[in-house]
Length: 509
Ligand code: UN1
Image 1 (cartoon, rainbow, N blue to C red):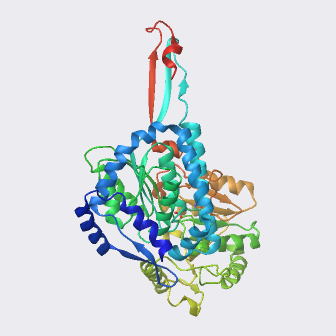
Image 2: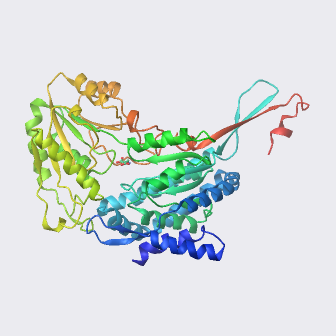
Image 3: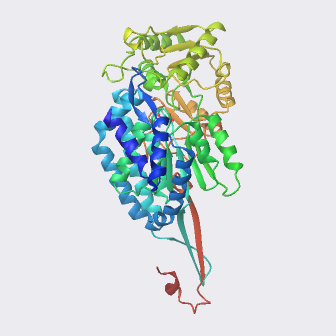
């Protein structure tokens, strides 16, 4: 497939080597290392990827280090212009991006549309931040006879390591933020979704972002490990599992050299609490969306639904009715609600969980899978009734919803149990009682609290997204404190009395 293959192969070419003999050896090596990228729906080959070798990574870092000071010195205005140009090009190429999102990541069309929208929004939001925060220095108050100026600068080279479940939005988001702040970036897409990432990087280069400032480094976990253990990397922005974030943290800490920073957005064990004042139709709609949209493959997705005991039967009957109407199938088909999960490993893990819960005696309801699903990595949407969130040991990243019934008057216990998981990403509440809302808001340790709506689909700029505890380091993506975390602060203090009291002479420029 030339569409999917071209950008990746061509893009990698230019940072290999200028020596023709070494080049042909590398080309041969590289051809041997080619890996196929498969569709999660059909298993067919969508394109190919050539993973970065350790030599590629070494060269890429050297180039990124050399290019960074010029990029930083360009200033926020100029960087914003380039990021905005990139956002326009992404938007113009929506059709190509949607196509890859569906075929490479198995996303449904509505999900793919939102994905492209979010990537464009991230670029524009961080461009505006670059303009506001990385322009003129900020004067700070001080004693008479002194001028103090605060400037923000890039930290150096950032590695952005992104997940397959948002192969464009969360690939572009942290990358755009790091660029906005004046860093050069080595962007490592998820091993399963390098093709859409390659196209996005190509579009950024076409928009004028220099090729040494932004480089694609595709590959598996060994590529990520090579990046995070390199002492020239100033920071890592990672989205993925809590376990991998902990590994990256150790890898950064073990290096001799820069004290690197980690910005991590990780997993969740997200709950929704529904009391007897909630509207059943609204609850049904929001539960179905939050648990099963994107085949449950969002870190924001609903995993454990807490239903107040006295309304639980009614609610569950309605939810199961809507659940049975879900269409599982080809993500390209407009009627499809639930597509495949990303790969065989993800499927096996989810199936093992369902089997284990069944064996433990928890009631399990599953949808039958239609014939069209036979070649793909499909997991039948599943509802499992359990006793408490603490019956679960880890996040299940797929279309599996757990349901708990809680007695009236035990809200404190419910919140304590949710907090006891150690995660703190999203929490939903369906209640029309203001005191209940205030109580949950005061006691739940979560990053994003959603009341009387579903808990997925955070909007850039309006709902900055990210968790606490095991769910991540913050700051929240798409929020006002994000870009500054990618920057260092420098303060210039000038004694204006020593210079004859002429503050303007020194402070200018
Ligand atoms: C993720 O799944 O890695 O709000 C996080 C949402 C998305 C979640 C992204 N922004 O549903």
